[in-house]
Image (cartoon, rainbow, N blue to C red; front, top):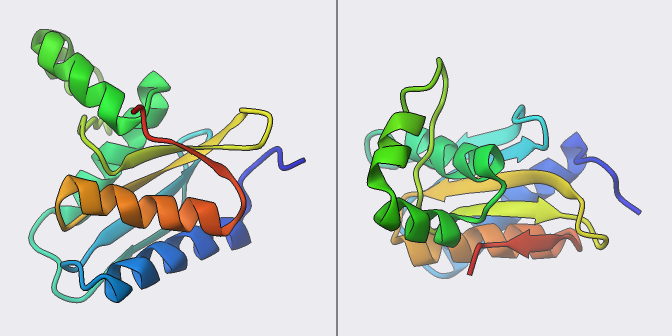
Length: 146
């Protein structure tokens, strides 16, 4: 039973997510893998990513950890409660939340939260596909909030 996200696993999630993006000819991506504490375990931005993609990927992944919900559920809640999400962004230094697909929680087989992946660069649906490929490649469960 996996109880925490180690560096080797995070790196495989990252490299597989980027390989998936290349195989599907997605736009260049930024991918960040967080552990359950919110510490960055692995991060990369492909050559040619557009401006601020790293920060958006960070906000997608970190936001899912902050609220314990996948990006798709965060997006629904942000639409219903925009003032809450505006306030959330200003609650403290380093707080980031981008409520959109491409922020995916990582869980073990028992459902324990191990971390999150944030991906940005293509459409949010494609960002999510890349994250899912990475998480699935290491035999862990993905929670998109769908």
